[in-house]
Structure formats: structure tokens, C-alpha cells
Image 1 (cartoon, rainbow, N blue to C red):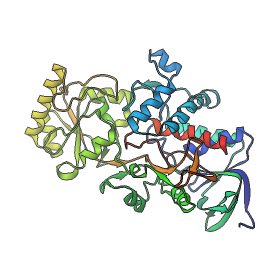
Image 2 (image 1 turned 60 degrees about the vertical axis):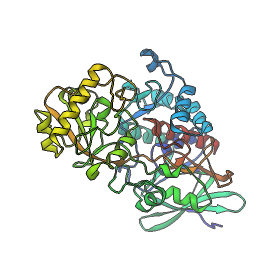
Image 3 (image 1 turned 30 degrees about the horizontal axis):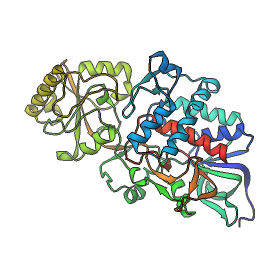
Image 4 (image 1 turned 180 degrees about the vertical axis):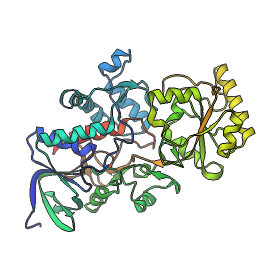
Length: 449
């Protein structure tokens, strides 16, 4: 039993990212005192929000109605269960909650979406676009405004348990000093994934990609997962954590989604190897298994111009250029004749209305149809796989309670966000879901604490 605590609060939250900050806001609104332990400094990158550039899913909004899109939380949950293989009770809990997140954005953070776009895995367009870094700052400011206390550079190391009460606090270090924090009512783990912990990635990732580039925050080292495991927590879908994510530029280590604007994916022989409107992980996973271990995204000036206008962050990579397809191929080290033949075949298919090779049918997830690559100059990027947000982790229930291997709640312990599992049992992902899932489950965790 811990005899003396350095500080006490009703709710201790481990992690000042998307899930943790939102949980803090909800807890403070309920009148609970809140301490957030964050191992990074306050100016450090610690959230996955910037990775997805602020794309957040909401279903049944006025912004969709303005575009004539009919949607509902139940439809969103159905897509999650059917496409992602998630647990129905988790998806229902999350989607029942998620429109409150949008309401908070509008009423308390003065944030409104810039637009609504489609995304892979969705049956309708429901991905609302925001400025990712701006959201995190506004969540942080709102949490502090409501009275939540954030302790920066405090690295949580261990959960303190009591045989009768359950989890009663957290041990942490700050600048070499060991500190103890008492949780009067509950502890919420919101530490993100474990992509920066190579030992955990290798242990839990049966399809571990040796050359994958980690693009998640440096704080995502699995601290919360390890602490939860030590007190008997179970995992769910954890093998889907270390999954390939977006195609990533080998030269600059920046990811892109330009295939959803019309680029095609080819191997070193210049041949397409997959339908480019599949979930982004499949493109990368199959790409690094191509000859030489790399793959290439090819596009023309028309696609580049549209991308620069709509999604300029998708053009952060090193671009190769050629006035002709053959010139581009030579500049990139791809078989020139193979790429020329592939482009001609693809363009002919598109103009006939059917991709006979892979049945590609859409762009940007579910909006638009394939377009030919015929306007010079032509461009390309050399790619490998990356890992961004993880899709498996600590087992939780619909109240965000951490469960043991018998599916019994560990008293006074909750978890939310990327450190949890249960939403992506098929290893597939619906674009823009991680952020809204993190905030929604963070709210649920705070409310049930």
C-alpha cells in the first residue's frame, strides 16, 4: 500500500494527447479534479492528429445534409463493424457519443469543418476536414481553462493497486525524481500506440515490416500498454497494431494519399500490382513485397495540379519528373518500356470505363472515377511502407473500462484512444476514425469514472 502521495486528484489521466485531453474536459465538466501526466514537454509532438491532417469522421451532420448526403451514427457503426471487423458494442458506444464531439468543436472550440470528403471504407462521404494541430492546441487550452492540471515531462511508470479497491494511483518520474499520484476515483490510460517501441512491434506484429518508417509521435512507446499488462489487463486485436499505413517517400520520409487523387502504384518493372482504391495499408503492404522491396506512385500534371489545390500536404515528398513516361521511368530507375506499356493499358481501360486488371473504381475512397494519366509532365515518388496510428491494444468494454482475460473490469482503470483494441478486428481501417474514436471513448471513460 502506498503510504504517502505527492499529489492527489479524483481522476489521473496518463497522456495529454487527443483522448487524454478530451477525457480531461469531460471530467472537469462533471466536477472532478484532474491531473494529466504527460512525459513530453508541452511544445512536443505527442498526438496522432497531425499525421492525419485533421480528417475526422462525423455521421449525420448538417454539413453532409448541405451536400445531399444521407447518413447516421447507426450507418457509421455498421460500416465499422462490417468493414473493420470491430465489436458492435464498441462501435455503437462510440457512434452514439461522437456527434457530441462535433458539438463541442462548434460551441466551445470555435471549430468548424472546412469540408466533407469521402474516405476508404465509408459507404458515404463523412470525413470532415479540420486543421489537426489547431485542434490539439484548442483541446489543451479548453482543458486548462476548465481547471485540468497538466504535468509536463512526467513519465508514468507503474500503476499502484490495492487488493480491494483496484487501481488507486500512478508512479511516475520527473527529471530523475520518483513521484506518486493518488487517483481518488479512477485512472485513465491515454498513451497512444506502441510504434516507437521496436521490441513491442516485433513481439505483437506477426507481419512486421522491416523497412517500415515510423511516423507516429515519439511518445508512442507503449507505456500505457505495458502498465496495463502488469496489472492483469487483456489485449484485443493487438496483432493489428503494427500494420502498414500510407505509402511513404523513401527520400523524405513523408507520407501521401495521392493515389486517391488518381495516381497509380507500380513496381520496379513498371507494372501495377494492386487496385489503388483499396485501403491504404494494402497498397503499402503489398508494395514492399514487390521486387527490390519498394514501389512507386505515378501521376501526371493534371493530378498534381488538383492535389496541390485540394491536398497540398500530399505533395511533401521528393518528386521525380519526366516530360515523357519513358523519361520519368529512367529518372526513377523503373523499366521504361514496362511503365509505358502499363500506362497505355491503364489509360485505354479508363477511357472504356473499366479497369480490367484490378477493377479499380473510385478515387478519394468513394468519390469519383479513375482518370487517365496523359497530361505531361509526368511525376512519381519512390515509396516504402510506414506505420502511423496503431489499431490494437488494451481490451476495453463499451464503458471504456479495462478488462482482464476473463472479460472482467479491473476496478478504477479505464483506457481510451490508440492504446486500446476492439474497433479493427479485421485489420482494416476506416479513414478518419482514430481521432473521433479517441475523443468519444475518452469522454465515455471520464463519464463512467
